Length: 104
Image (tube, rainbow, N blue to C red; front, side, top):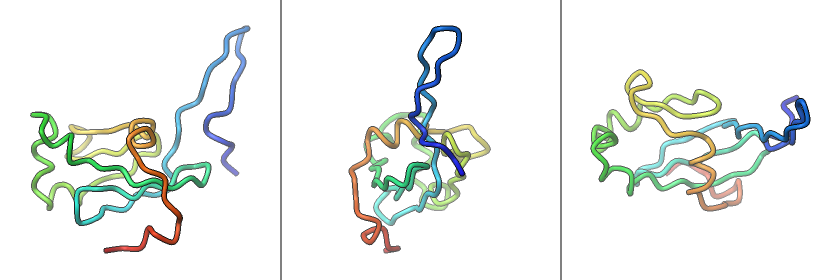
């Protein structure tokens, strides 16, 4: 079974933190992503603020936004041309109860 993502790893006397992993991701109608992380934590990440950036503008097209791929440590669109890390999604996400992650 996958270990807690933020476990501390000591290597040659240095302390490292492992990246979070995404267990699952679900696209919502309002440019948000329902994320379940490897540790079981659930969050809703609002992607709308990113759509103002030139690099994320193609995601305004919901057909493209809906083609998200879960790559474990990050999510990607357009063959990895656009991506967001699991850590970013965790930091911008708001904690939710698993029961509230039903499809809209």
